[in-house]
Amino acid sequence: MNDIKANGSEYESDRVSTYYDFDVLVIGSGAAGLSLALRLADHAKVAVISKNKLNSGATSWAQGGIAAVLSSKDTIASHVADTMAAGGGLCHEDTVQHVVEKSAACIDWLIEKGVAFTPFEPSIARPKDTYVENHYHLTREGGHSHRRVIHAADATGKVLHNTLEDQVCDHDNVFLFEHHMAVDLISNGAGSLDGRQCLGAYVLDTKNDEVQVFRAKKTVLATGGASRVYLYSSNPDGSTGDGIAMAWRMGCSVVNMEFNQFHPTCLYNPEARTFLLTEALRGEGAKLRLPNGEAFMHKFDEREELAPRDVVARAIDHEMKRLGADCVYLDISHKDADFIREHFPTIYKRCMKLGYDLTQEPIPVVPAAHYTSGGVRTNLAGQTEVDGLYAIGEVAHTGLHGANRMASNSLLECLVYSYAAANDILEKLPQAGQHRSIDPWDATRVTDSDEEVIVSHNWSELRHFMWDYVGIVRTTRRLERAARRIEMLAGEIREYYGSFRITPDLLELRNLVTVAELIVRSALLRTESRGLHYTLDYPDTDPEQARDTVLRPPRRPR
Image (cartoon, rainbow, N blue to C red; front, side, top):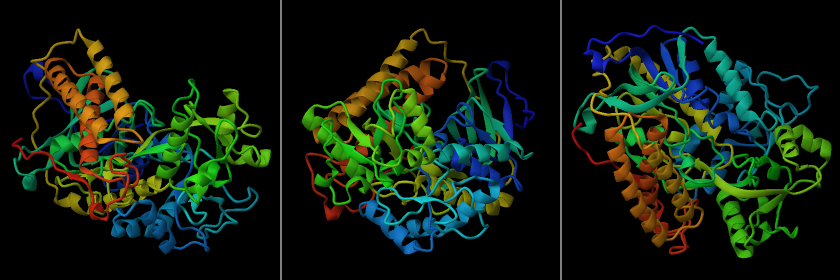
């Protein structure tokens, strides 16, 4: 891991900040952030900041794989059509076409970097340029009409992340800052969005409790999603919507925040509340069953277990509420035991540790918040509405997912947009000019808090009422109730933020309450049911509302 000498500060001693200067600042260290850094590294000086360890984000938790057109039996048109169908009429066709067309090239790049995808047979050597079923094992997941998900057993994200991390750690032009959390983006102070530029970010060094200034010619948000706004989530603790909230405060529009994907099958166990059971299990024949052993998905969709995630999650939610059951069950025990252990080794071992034998019995599962399908508005190059600011990965709204993300399109989006953003950044860097003067962080008017309990209480309250009122099934009354609670909490958090020294928990809570407000506002504007947004007050889909929900922040001088 590279070290870099920081610049000093010319200000008074009570306002000293450490300064860093880079060509590109990447906020986030998952698949999007690391692949971008690696693509830039030969041509630019890049900083990557991570809230915790580099591998603590959602990428390392991804099990299923990456959807791509790799088989001679598959076509780009088919992948595009499947994605458009899953997206409930809101996918941007130009975006979908762009992403799918780049899918094979991105897989090619990963293989060149050393990502060891699962071969169809271990004894068969991998050719460089041929992707058919007898070279790599391709699985099928919900919404896909073909086997097109390339994977590394059931730990694709971990294998992918480890490979990228090894590469960036060895590169002299990439500087990695673990345990650093972005506080806010820094603008040039322009009142008009047309003239606003992002100059970098204020960043909290959580180990040394110091807010540092990172100046950058280009800044990239790769911070992931916001599923931790809910009580039950498959995501790591850091998925608190930081990038979405910071971009909103900077003046960027956000799009389709009402579409929060709930993964249908998280393990129901108090010792493993965030452990996901990959959709690939259902792709290989696993059945969902009621506590009495009865299968039920045929009553909800002709595709049964391979229906899109919103359909499956609502079906499970319906059956649990109808029966008063704590969970339903996922059963793949009818498949060959050696096949299960070979294709799902991570899940098999984890379940065995918790007392469940995947090869012999059904496993208890429940839905959990999994993916933020909306986000910061960007174009095909990952650019936001603010000059010098990009957003890639789950933090962004590109138009790929529409009203419902199709399985295994998320890692693909990270890879395609890191490629597109890297090309755009490298083209524009020569005209970026010199670093601007930036004031240091001012903490002279705040004190240490003697009421930290407020943060923990507000955090708990927010996540509970978001789960109860803004979950898989919604009503207008529930959303309005949530909006009132958010308004009260937001006021308390603003007052607290302005009075006390910042902490990671306070920063995350500040961002979460912003994201919660954006979700509820967006959900109230959509008076229909579509994709991941289902409301009992408007259970039908309204063709007149086949449009994005766009929220624009107030244009106030900065």
